[in-house]
Image 1 (cartoon, rainbow, N blue to C red):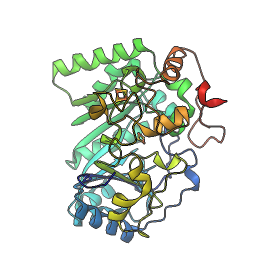
Image 2: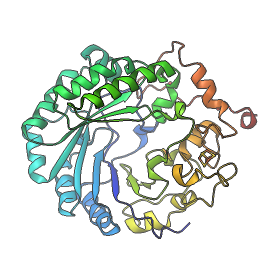
Image 3: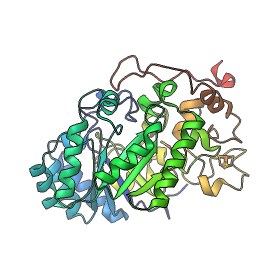
Length: 372
Ligand code: SF4
Ligand code: FES
């Protein structure tokens, strides 16, 4: 499928996979330590100029922990100089107010702070380190500098029952937006799925808390979407493969999403060996699932395919071993039993491994048709 008509508007710039936190649901590749920080400030700035020429208007500086990149100030200035809206996604433990102010001076426009729970001990237990109080200080610094703040909380079995408290925390910190993002099962999160997947009852209670807060209308704007595993239909992951969002990894690989490099056999191009336009328009890996020519039944003749755009190719691969399979999150998928089976186990206690734990690996494929 040609890239014609697929103009990206958002660049997700993963500056480094290094991070002082060790969250059990981290979506970085399990092998993150082998990915070098290959791009310096000058190279990132070049990528931003080329991205702007492609149509990109927004860049999210993320990771890992992007503030650990030694050229962060130059990177922010490079993105702003290219005319992009510059958004920083951080765990909030590495920047003091002066450094944050300096980034604002260079063109930083908004920040997203991740918090693991509404309570210090529970939050630090998920992060694998003491970080909660520092995060609150970061939120206060952002408010003092008038930087719009999004609070991002990854929801899972361990914190969903405190959704009320999370909303209250967002209100107290003066967040403009609260993203209550149910875990996506990639990277370490997939390895820890047995410990993270919530029950349907927990999700229902959380949805009730969100509805009450929205009705009250006195807090941050709340984003809350039912997770794939309980929705019976997949979401259009990344707004569709290779359509609107491009991801650059710390080594410069240009991907349609943060997990695509884990799919064997797909060839992606690396910047700056290839121009960004070539990475986006001509890499065989990005072309592989652009559009809908690749779809098989039941998707091929399904009226919903233009809404979900085939769901998540990485999830299809991770759960079935076949990236072209119908996303098992879909109740019409031949492999939907994999998701039903995981749901049935959602109430059982299980141990979660921290990011970086060498015992973390993908759960064995549970599709009997492909396991043999
Ligand atoms: Fe979407 Fe395919 Fe399921 Fe139809 S069958 S709803 S196109 S994933
Ligand atoms: Fe890769 Fe969904 S994360 S397509």
